[in-house]
Amino acid sequence: LRPCRNNGGRVLPPSPPGLPIIGSMHQLGRGHHHRKLQALAQRHGDIFLLWLGSVPALVVSSASVAEEVLKNQDHRWRQLRRIAVVHLLSVKRVDSFRALREEEVASLVARIRATGASDDERGRLRAVNMSELIVSLTYTVISKAAFGNKLGGMDPGSCRAMMKEVADLLETVAVSDMFPRLRWLDWATGLDAKIGRTARKLDNVLERALQEHEKKPEDEDEAADLLDDLLLVIKEGGEGLNLDRIDVKGLILDLFIGGIDTTSKAIEWAMAYLIKNPREMANVQEEVRQVAGPQGVLEEHLGRMSRHAGSPERSHADTKLHGYNIPAKTRVIINAWAIGRDKESWENAEEFLPERFMHNAIDYNSKDFRFIPFSTGRRGCPGIAFATRLAELALANLLYHFDWELPEGQDVESFEVMESSGLSPSLKSALTLVAKPLQATLQTSICALSEKWGDAT
Ligand code: HEM
Image (cartoon, rainbow, N blue to C red; front, side, top):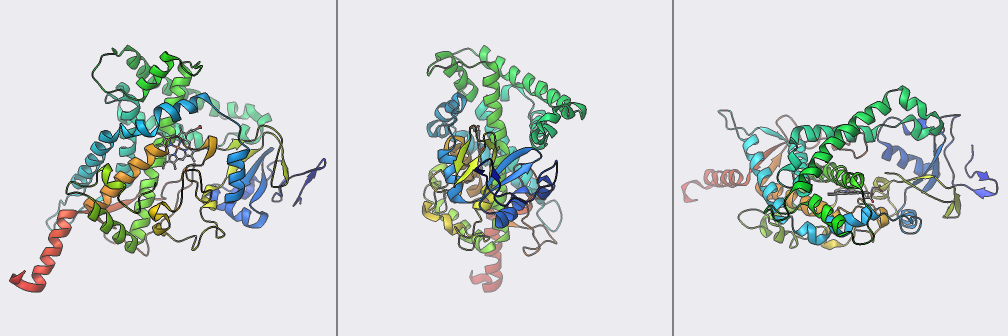
């Protein structure tokens, strides 16, 4: 209808044909939006406008346009974000949690051994739900880092259930997101009430954790956690700080929402792709086992491995991008998934080739816009060091301590590495694997050798 709509002399980006009232919403369907947006970009270009009801959204699908948006178009700067970057998630502070990470990863390995141990007379190992164990690892590490060993007096099970409620709400599309004038419909459908209930529950938990920390005597022996740090920053009041309780609770909640699922899914996806690509699995296991010590992988080993890796935004004012006029309040969707698979940027874009990232050839931390899992610029992820340290340590230990197989009846060819729908998609089905402990594997090889060569071995 309007490949290059001219709006009062202003040239808007091209947009797919829309329907009355709903605009282009029907093009998005119910899930896998990153794939649908990629297909639309193939037809309409790296930068196009999508009408979500009456709300315009600019979709960016190439590294060069993403660079322009993230570097130059974003002038926001938030005080809270600065605290997260400078005080809570700095490399130095992340270093200080090394013992916590190593302890929790060792406990993950022990849990896999225990859960997967054989319970039948043929000595067959049991399949382990790795998705569940991995998310429990990231949840424990982040909550202990944020609230200390007592987890702010929270019962871990109910806290996780509550975080799931929050994540589900974040994925719910409110009518008012698409049609701001129909805000009353969110009240009528009960969405407002549901949000209110979850917010109150969340606030109670965070308030309790906050009060416990405020009561804590200054000379208490227990090591400081991120909530202690935050209270100290506020007390010292530097940098013109003017934060209230809601800000403090909001920031801690951000760490939970931003950190737990993202990091566990990164580990889960890496495991799934390695299972699907046995040659890559063998290569990376060989390297991990050469570098690690007898106890497994410690953080000091990671740097010696060559495979070690060194919400919609809104434009606030009318602006120009690639020759197009972008009206104020347009949402911006950067399809990092499509950018990471762009054939212009990547050879064999759809293939799983970890060698691309060997020796840190590609900088995923803001300099190379062809690969931006953590976004970049002032909206970029402040938890990048926290996430990569934990994910690398966990993954390296999983690969060191076990050989991995699919459960009986499944084979690599039919194993589907496919994502679910949702804000940060996980695998469509939980990752269930058989973990053969290293010792058992060695023993099996020795037995095989003995059979082959007889007693001489
Ligand atoms: C592999 C793991 C992770 C990935 C892929 C990831 C990715 C991202 C991305 C793409 C954003 C920008 C979202 C936007 O544009 O609105 C973001 C924001 C954020 N991330 Fe992460 N993240 C990860 C882990 C973590 C961890 C472990 C933490 C904290 C412990 C964390 C804390 C945050 C926070 C607080 C924000 C919001 C920043 C702001 O509002 O300015 N993330 N993350």
